[in-house]
Length: 150
Length: 150
DNA sequence: AATCAAATGCAATATTATTGCATTTATAAT
DNA sequence: ATTATAAATGCAATAATATTGCATTTGATT
Ligand SMILES: [Mn+2]
Ligand SMILES: [Mn+2]
Ligand SMILES: [Zn+2]
Ligand SMILES: [Zn+2]
Image (tube, rainbow over all chains, first blue to last red; front, side, top):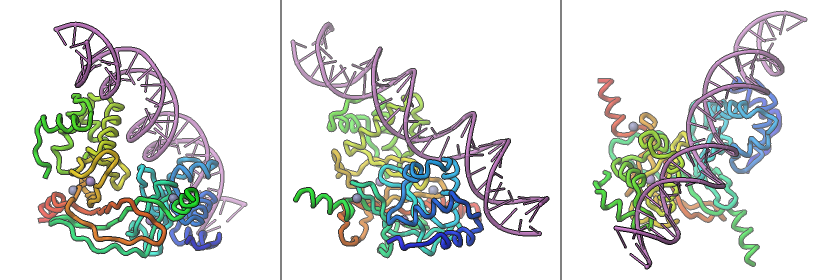
């Protein structure tokens, strides 16, 4: 998960997208990249409480537009953000992987390399993209539960 | 779509779930049942502008808990509500159908009878439910676009 | 070192959602 | 029918989430 990246990777990333390398942006990037799950907007906000709320919104929007991160709403409608995997670009998202929402810890997992089988829609529907959601219990929470009941 | 139901159907429905038959509730039911697509919270609110905002929230929550309607977030994170199809009950939702979000008219379609093929998750993930989302252009909007360009 | 566009921070406002409490209403019991 | 009661509604207050405009700061370029 979450392969380790250093400061310079992030600076390059911003460079590539013609975004200025600012401290708030680098901090947001390193926080998101360090986790194996998506990060919720509330979490980002409380961890980065010294960054202005509005700035955070603008950073997230910019990153999303550039195809650096993607947004996913969890079961409660809360916005979560995760790094994009390679093939996303400016206004071109291809995060057609499964999003697993743990009902216990609320974490959202991006499960890549899970090619969803082709689905055919009724006549007339022109599809641009799919996302598959699943909810249930994640490995960590399953283990914890097992430990307790033992 | 949206099979016609009369007042008495709705009253029975409320009865069945031990909910009082009140005017706000009946109006919400008939509005939602009359449409072939889901209804967004903002739409409900503006159409039912004489019903108190808080009452609306409580009605929607109650209906959702009873398994009368289900909530689905569209691409913008806006809450949309649609009638449940038969097999949902108190705290027991089985709306595992495809939700199609038209990027033009923003409507959310519940496409039932679209059995999604089984997906197997990585080791450790215990799944309770799936939802498949698709986005693109709905039949109506496709037709309109075709008409214009002709 | 100077310049300029981009990014940030702050204030104001908008939208969406929740909580507590007083009042009204639907239902059931009398 | 009348009354009793719990449920539902409406209203006020507050919280949480999001957007806009503008003054100030900062990163990149010359
Ligand atoms: Mn993802
Ligand atoms: Mn649905
Ligand atoms: Zn979990
Ligand atoms: Zn449409």
